[in-house]
Length: 212
Ligand code: AP5
Image (cartoon, rainbow, N blue to C red):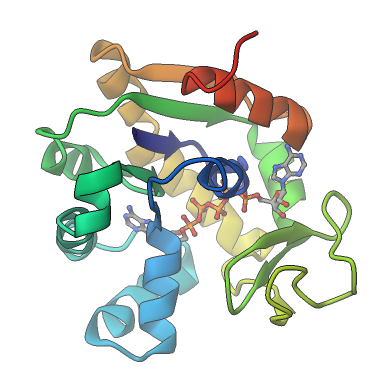
């Protein structure tokens, strides 16, 4: 199974990718998490990426393309395929995956107002990256991850100001990928403004794991 998760920031790509990952063997590869991990480990690539991420700008193509191509070479991807969340985000990145046979590209669409409202309430586990929300998905114990008991934090790029820059980057650089993958017949559009459960039904249907 080779699936791409595409859509604006806060569309719920990560939420849906984590849910699907529980049902399939394909590894979940999340570009934002890889970069945040590199930052916390003070790796060279993390130092390069941090300056861009803090401002809500895309990390340069050459940095992220190298990371993804290396990751896709690993045994688990060769054996089971992959769920790829947050890559590609530019035409250059998409072209780097030109030779990969994707099954589907899931495009989650929401409008900018909903995205901005959603992002303010997001909390993320600093240990396992599980995603919560102060109104929509509360942990059992405030501030603590249900899955690993890690601390829930607010990402430093989740401010309204940085979110606006992330949305601009999305509209300028990532949205054109919709046409790119539509021409290849791979896009499945999913309305991401309904409930997580409704959207997950659509997701399962889109990847052939459920019937309508
Ligand atoms: P990244 O971490 O990928 O952030 P993003 O794309 O902006 O996506 P988000 O993680 O914000 O949102 P999401 O769609 O996963 O939504 P979520 O499920 O969390 O990237 C961060 C940065 O890294 C970029 O800005 C860039 O600098 C860099 N980067 C990453 N990849 C790159 C690349 N390829 N090239 C260059 N730079 C790159 O949901 C959001 C919230 O809403 C949560 O609280 C969730 O609980 C809630 N929620 C989810 N679904 C629903 C629903 N249906 N109803 C109500 N609430 C919901």
